[in-house]
Image (cartoon, rainbow, N blue to C red):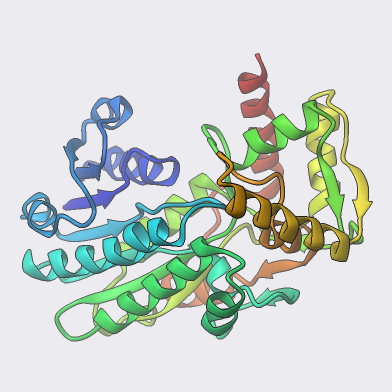
Length: 336
């Protein structure tokens, strides 16, 4: 089989590329820049922009399916930038898939598309998109843009193109360039502050499990499949008490544990003030806190793996204990 992976040089994309190559599939990685690890895996590397439909369709020629993983992530930045990559880019991918005559598309999204400012405990794929909340409150340009992208993929599903949407939550593991290094930086500077009551539960997702879910969903995707045209949360089957888990990592690494807690109302207010300052003064980088991150750190957001297990036979590859041990090993490597 032959597949194209957008963002094949990224954290999740590269794991998908490696997984496909390990079983003998031909793989094309489509990214803005060249990634040596992609070529080392034996995959073909194509450089291009997500909105270049002609180049996309040329790179897709001869493929049996497409994994659309590439996205602009982050907690801060101009809304237009997120719209360009995540909305216009997804629209271009869908059009290119059609132009190339490909019948299967697995789209990577995020649970943040359902974020409505409330606790979610063991939510499943009946949880609706929170488009109204995300667009009106403007708490996260990333979440808003990914929700809009999901609608494009859902609208594209039909007789000629079968789609499925996966929403991995807080991907971590060996090679993590985002979640764990942020924790490390804040903990070592004694700036890891707990928000809320410290009792919120959160679902995490080891990168191996996220990649496995993508490949398995693609393998079993056809027009009559139970998961065709649907969206699924992907995470560890066991959730964690967020601040207990983070403190466990810190203790094992001999770092200061989290401080606080800071009440959610105060953290949200600080986030709103920081956003105003960064926007009004044109400050570089991202604010130390935003309203969205304050709520994410304080609220519970756990998701049921029942639908994925039922509809496309998902089976967890790395349990929580092994995933946590891998996180500790990775943080030790980063810290040395």
